[in-house]
Amino acid sequence: MRRLLAAALLACAIAGCARAPATVPGVIRLGEQQEPDSLNLMFGNNSATDEVSALLYSFLLRVDDEGNLIPDLATAVPTRSNGGISRDGKTITLHLRHNARWSDGVPVTAADWLFTLSAVRNQRNNIKSNYGWDGIASANAPDPYTLVIHLKAPSVAAFDVLTMGGTAYPPLPAHLLAKLPDINRAAFNAAPISSGPYVLKAWNHGASLVFAPNPYYWRGAPHNKEIIWKIVPDTNTLFNQLKTHEIDLYPGIDSNSVPRLGELRGIAIQHRLVANWRHLGINMSRPLLSDVRVREALAEGIDWKRINDTIYHGINGLALSDVFPESWAAPKLPAYRYDPAHARALLAQAGWKLGNDGVLHRGAQTMRLTISASISAKSNEQSEVVMQSMLRSLGIDLTIRNYPASLMFAQNGPLYTGKYDLEWSIDTNGPDPDNAGLWNSAYIPPHGANTSWLRDPEVDRLSTAAASTYDMARRKALYQQEEERIRADVPAVFFYWETQYYGRNPDFKGFKPAAFLADTWNAWEWQI
Image (cartoon, rainbow, N blue to C red):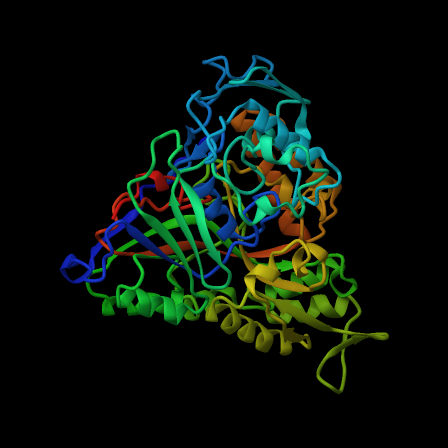
């Protein structure tokens, strides 16, 4: 369940690390491109929701900056040796802290996690996914601070729901929500009380979220007066605000801005490989994309290395799969070759012929596709324009149709409703390589995040088997087979693993960028 990432590469503060003149003692200003689409992780699909959730909530367990599980509400990480995992792997026992309270003063107990489980199972709730939760047979609390979870079978996915981010929903306040028939439109989703280090002070939609210390936080209230999450969609504006010290942190500096880092004065620069993978997602349920030869032609008809070297300045490592390359489970696979001639041959084999309009036709069908990305980064559209040109040379007409991130990844947005052909986005991995929630047909929306609509019995079998054993050698072999099958199906073209750059005010102490899930994982330690 643990994975260690190589130590983060740390660069020195540029130009002598002079003190930032605009430091506001006790106030941390984060420059962020995205706004959360919900403050209830059950309904939020973007990375901003994951990051903000780690500010607002305590989870049973957390993941540190290197991918290790650490206790949060639970007093210890369950293992076989400490009795937290039964010998047959089907029962997990957790002991909770007695001093954890909600920001209204009510104790956080096992009843809150049991309510979360009931909310996941409530068919009225339009949650984003029940992945991992569906492996739980039952759960009970012998006392308010002991939680016993019975699994249908040994399952790493069920274990992962105890952590943070993705489908690891935190305990929710039963005393506020249990009487509601559903929580889809609960006021709590936009104005929650907190069990984490910070409470929401204000949400100025489209502009900022402001957080204040939670006086009841079990580790003790943080020492900062405020954290301000400044929403700045434009990457040039973000970079300039970092340069002028109007923000104290710019995480994930846009690749187009990386060559400009030498312009910064009095800013500390950090960078590290993170578990964010960009890909070209392919909607296999669309008639024009249902033939694997068409999908393979897309993979071979685009020069991915050129896009990475030019638009992304070669700072990211090209990806071969969705398993983190430094993981113990990373598969060995060949890259798709750039071969436009073979791509044309594949399209011809699939019955597509070039018309007088320069576009492929097959009977009454015309090869006209759309590609969608979020509008938060100029590199997205630059990449799409290059892909548009390359595919046009194959006879594929590609229209760019981009969306705000809040809509792109919403439950009613194009990805989760299947109203797209191709999508250009980033997914974020947790420390465990389990990926059934992305590729298993049981998790096609609205049941999960298989937004490629992949239906492959062999992928289903392999992903289920890999998530049903704790034997790492066995899992590694199964992931090798699963990834070979995914590569053959081409539900997506894996593009890069991100090397993320961070610009930080040197007065901002305690920030430790995370390889997995959320840089806010230790926000209680932050100080300025």
